[in-house]
Amino acid sequence: MNTIVVAQLQRQFQDYIVSLYQQGFLDNQFSELRKLQDEGTPDFVAEVVSLFFDDCSKLINTMSISLERPDNVDFKQVDSGVHQLKGSSSSVGARRVKNVCISFKECCDVQNREGCLRCLQQVDYEYKMLKTKLQDLFNLEKQILQAGGTIPQVDIN
Image 1 (cartoon, helix red, strand yellow):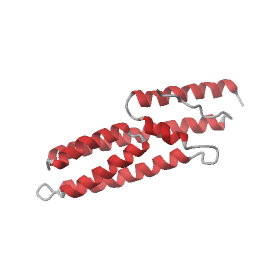
Image 2: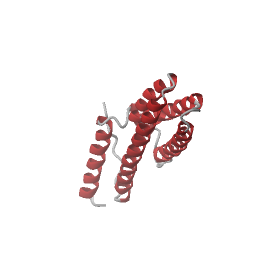
Image 3: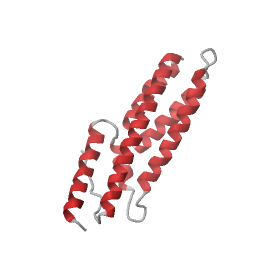
Image 4: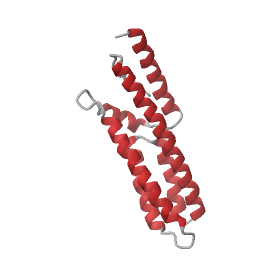
C-alpha cells in the first residue's frame, strides 16, 4: 500500500463529497444512507443510488410522454410521477432533484403544461448531473479501496 497515494485519494474524496453538499447536490439524508454501509455491504449506497437513477429515468420518460399531448395532458399521472420522484430523491439525499420536484408539483397543481415541461427539463438535467457526480465519487471510493485504503468518514455539518 502506498500511503501517500491513499492519503491523496482520501483527501480528494473528502473535498469532492464536501463540494457536492456545498453545491446543493446532496443533503444530510445522503450522509444517513452512507452510515448504513459497512464492510458487509460495501456497495450498499451505490446500489441504492443505482436503483434511484433507474427509477428517475423511468419516471422522467413516463412524465415526458404524458406531457407530449398539449390538448390532453394527464396532470394526475404527471403529479403522481413527480410525487414518486420527490419521495425517492428525498430518501437518497438528492437535494437539487427534490427541490425541482417541489416547483414541478406546483405547476401540476395549476395544470401549467409549459411550467411542467420546464421543470421536466430541469429535473432531467439535475438527475443527470447528480448521476455523473456520484459515479465519480464511487470511482474515487474504488480507487481508495484498490490502493489498500479505507473510505474516510466525512462530517458535513
